[in-house]
Image 1 (tube, protein in one colour):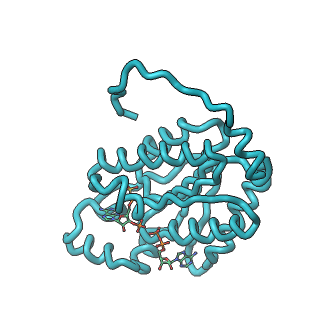
Image 2 (tube, helix red, strand yellow):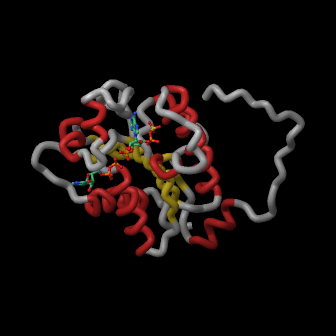
Image 3 (cartoon, helix red, strand yellow):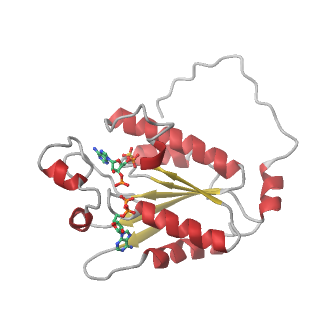
Length: 207
Ligand SMILES: Nc1ncnc2c1ncn2[C@@H]1O[C@H](COP(=O)(O)OS(=O)(=O)O)[C@@H](OP(=O)(O)O)[C@H]1O
Ligand SMILES: Nc1ncnc2c1ncn2[C@@H]1O[C@H](COP(=O)(O)OP(=O)(O)O)[C@@H](O)[C@H]1O
């Protein structure tokens, strides 16, 4: 991460209520589920299905969706490489705070660059950053095109669109890969169940 620290003479203030206490209260472990993939791969749909599935099990979640956060906190950022990096850095820092609050934070954003995602991973304790790659081919995403953005990108009305004239670097070693290939359609709730099983297995759904 290339952020220059400009604050000096700052001292960390400890609280008597710590992450451990919050987790006890919530009966879960705070973590970040980081969903990455092309536009139209189903990130927001999976985030919602996952949040719903966990909520119905009595688990507290919060979604940080790239599109949504760009309406507020990140409304000053474009899609240039350095602005995408800053978008991801800020969401990574906010996700870290949510995880520290004991919440299961679901971040869903394209996050096309490996180094930006890895920098967010490095903010969290080992195991608490769970990267989920929605491995959906460009042709499938483009055929879905729910917002008509691929169409605009193809005719040059949007420049630097991920997958068309901007890169996407797939994860090399992530925790979960969810594939949507050929005619085998995997429903969002089935995908969410896979992630929930992972959380259960790793002990995140208990204090
Ligand atoms: N140039 C370009 N490239 C990719 N995507 C674009 C672009 N311009 C606008 N959009 C819309 O912005 C959404 C992606 O925002 P993110 O914050 O997830 O992107 S990033 O992580 O900073 O790369 C993305 O939403 P999703 O379709 O939900 O992924 C698009 O709707
Ligand atoms: N598992 C799935 N199977 C089939 N269609 C899906 C699936 N997940 C999402 N979709 C559809 O794909 C489109 C893009 O989904 P969305 O969640 O908005 O993707 P993203 O957030 O990655 O841009 C939507 O029309 C959505 O209904």
